[in-house]
Length: 80
Image (cartoon, rainbow, N blue to C red; front, side, top):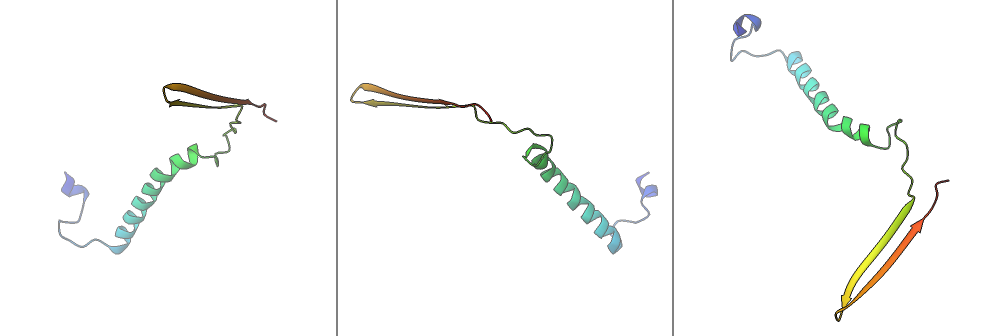
């Protein structure tokens, strides 16, 4: 069945334009597979809304000579 669909026999040369088309098609497909998720999830996506920072906090815990020290800082801001 496969021999009827493909007129070339094993070991025969393939035309250069067929090689070029198959190679270029595979290259474009590979680029699309790699770069499409990047563009879909990046900030270049026109449907993406920016996520503004509304709250930030830092907490540092240390233990110095068995005396636990704790510093805490919190900042809240509203988006413009």
